[in-house]
Image (cartoon, rainbow, N blue to C red; front, side, top):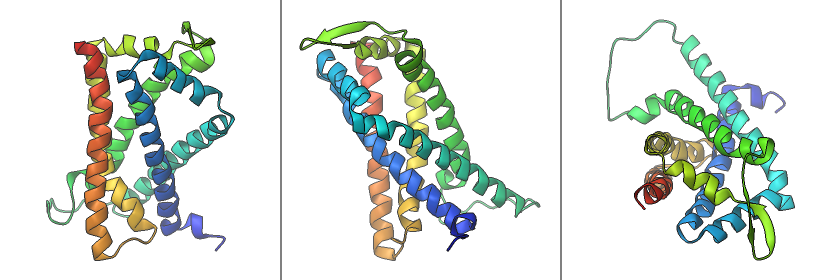
Length: 221
């Protein structure tokens, strides 16, 4: 039991659980972001709540740790898989046994991670560290004008291209990662496999479309 997390199965389990945690966060993040389409005040209130609520403050470092663990275990498993097959196999493409996404999860994840770093620099760093953000008052409460910070970037077409492309890559990552995570924790019979695979595709589409609609709305407004 003590060595479970050092085994291949244990590493996959940790990566799956951290992945499911991040999948849950994505839905919360998308829900808050979609309020930008309703009103600036509603979004600023939501962002202010996320920044000041004690529970959210506790979850913020947990989220960062979950992301770090997911990335590190992905690197470890990828390196291990590569080292176990030092000699390249003959080229073999079988679309029935695996998908392009499943064969390129590390590449997709690396691209998403790159965007995540850019995202942190543009938003989290300015809000939490540099203070390079204006303030506004909503309902008598002074708070960061997160709405203006975010939407100002969404009016730059090339940033929107990068943003949307990144979420498309994330969607491809999720189409495999979603059902694979559940499969790793034991939901791997034939019935659940079909349902989870379909749910993974639906979830990925919701995430890609949901996050993509927002920058397009402000770019074309």
